Image 1: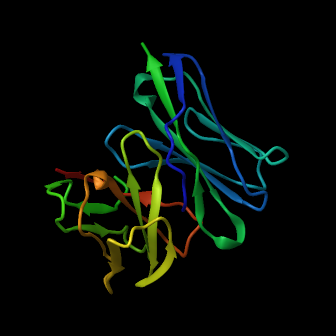
Image 2: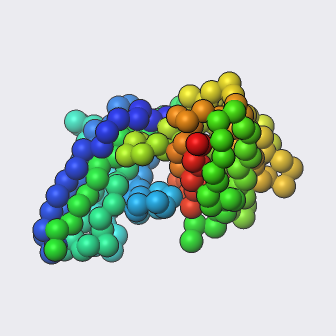
Length: 112
Length: 113
């Protein structure tokens, strides 16, 4: 996968609120999308994925929404907890190349 | 625990030196990926190996090289180290040739003094 290294945007939420992290993807041919969570000093951890034949997929406290019309992906975290503080990356399977393209990442800070 | 292991966890060395980072993929995974992550930066893809062969190359410096062995473990060699090479180096693995879910190891934190 490829990525561009830039300083990360930050989202700050209150504990207990819902969080929405957004990602704009680049390739209209992408057919598979993944969200990863990376806690400080640790490797990225798979959270949830979605295929392009779906608009929505739910996991435990997380929901991923896919809008193919505007090439937009979002991750919703319900009742955000301090343990959700991390950097969240989206990744897309860029079609024929069969490789993952990584988003820049969003830093989520949960305020007690 | 992703099933991907990396050694060492931490590495401190001096400029000009050479180091080797090691990665064992999840059981059954054929692809190994190497990423570099500097402080507060995104993931910078370096290189991918699939079943022993180089599959894809990212922004890997000529001073860096990698290989994947018959038992599918991989090593990333970093030589003529510079201060700017200080970073977290992650290995990930996936089951096939690419585009599917990658599972990451805990990383090796390299500090070049």
